[in-house]
Image 1 (cartoon, rainbow, N blue to C red):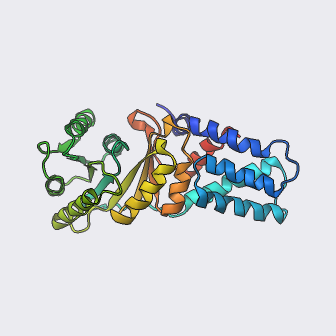
Image 2: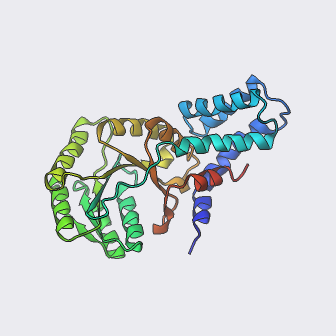
Length: 306
């Protein structure tokens, strides 16, 4: 079985290599830092998809510490940069909203192609391995392929899947799934929703309707509404995340497809600007490659090449 570190190392390899090339050039052949050096650092972080807000936060703190004489060497500044990134990633962290005596409902939302269905299956796999009873709800009723894909996951990991005919009302499927999961004493219900663009009001209203349907049978649910973000999108993902968090009651983040991109810095940008906890990272194709978000593991892999 792969170690957790090896999963993070391999999954973030492209991001780490890209990041080290951009950041390393700022530190080479520099005995004393000037304002031009800090501007180069800003460019490197923004070019690594850290976003403007996170970048300015990091650089301003480093500039203050450097000016006050807290560090001077290249090794010091790499360590300080790493610590500044860690501080941003640790903000707004929290435990899962688990209902330990009753059902916990997790709803996955996001744009088309972000990896919601695969995330639902992998998350069910992880929870099953912890001895939890997990039900899946196929509420992406507009795509027959999504329902079939979730059923395949259900067969693979021995989890029950609630589904309906193609084109059925997603809110009715969610209602039936919650009712069934409660009556059968499941620990978790994971709801896979249809992909939608953040600027499509009708589709966003449908999410609100689904939430209302769930609350009719279980007022405390969904305890978790997670935005699934495609890590390969880069800066555009920040716009999506900000809009979804305003409209759909999102209270957590899952980042997918990070193994196939050098744009993993957007995790820092989105965490910083949306003030939301990150719960899982998709670092590969295998079920175990969906890993709980770990700040030390993430920053360790990100700075590994420096």
